[in-house]
Image 1: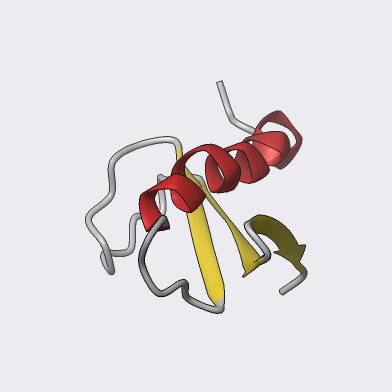
Image 2 (image 1 turned 120 degrees about the horizontal axis):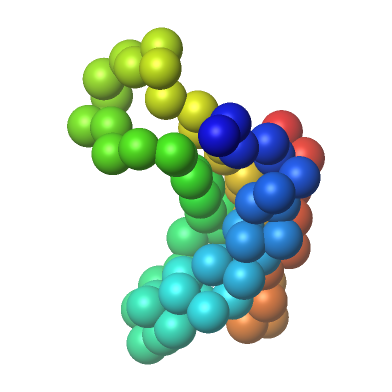
Length: 70
């Protein structure tokens, strides 16, 4: 079954808050984090026309993830 963005939209913020923020604790934080979700494993930088991928960007500020429109 094809995955629609609406099916995973809320997962991006959850991943940022539950995974990204804790993994950066005690380190210098980047200004921007990009999270990608795909319906299959795809090597980084390799085009796969059969894969469905979604990307979202977040600014990290005061211990929070703030969504950034591309």
